[in-house]
Image 1 (cartoon, rainbow, N blue to C red):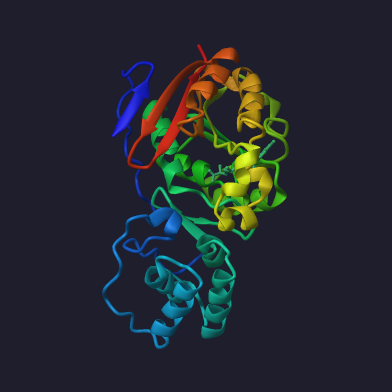
Image 2: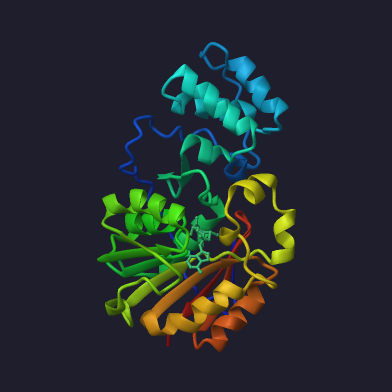
Length: 307
Ligand SMILES: C[S@@+](CC[C@H](N)C(=O)[O-])C[C@H]1O[C@@H](n2cnc3c(N)ncnc32)[C@H](O)[C@@H]1O
């Protein structure tokens, strides 16, 4: 269920088409298996035995390391590893606590296989809601920017659904920029390295119709409460949103009206707890805010429209 405030006039989220990415990986994404505990809460345990020799031992290793979906993870690792030796290395990394997606080298997002490198923020399935909202509000062929792009998952999903005339992304973390370039270059996306809007071409000012910005929004004092996978294997710059979690959003909102086209929209993810304050930040910046929430995904998005 989606709830909208302050008005309930927003159209329902449209679904994002599932398309295969042009990833060089040759193994098709096993749609029935969850990519990770991040993506799979509540997934039923697999009951069909896997034919690979050593499967049970591998499951036992993963389970002993605390992997809740050990059987599903074992299947994904076996299906992704090119050799037995590589499988052993990958299982070792997973047992050491790396997020499954960084071990596999990819995550599923909006039906796409997104390359994810070690040290790069793993796209969360809840962020699919932000993409759905953007798609429901934008016209095909829109000019799209993904700020704080990480792996470029949001931009890739927007590209698949909207076929934007122009697609740009930026991130301050060079590892994220490298990863996003791999994901977005085949889609015609340009990825820039730098602080927020600073590296974007000036000619974009006043022309952006969809400005997606999944900025870091965890309050500094809560970062220590995150699961170890995030705390230890995702960069702090991807998580820490400052004292109240809204520092980066404030900076984005101050500049956004200069980049948005009239009627263009800024979309940010936030927590339910922070949503009202995030909407206030957008209003202070001159945008018309609307908070939308998806219960199923536990996802909250604030949409700010340039009048
Ligand atoms: C929560 S992650 C989101 C990544 C991606 N958009 C996604 O949804 O998977 C936040 C990203 O913002 C980037 N970031 C943080 N501060 C930034 C800044 N000042 N300028 C540009 N990127 C920034 C981080 O490097 C990280 O990749």
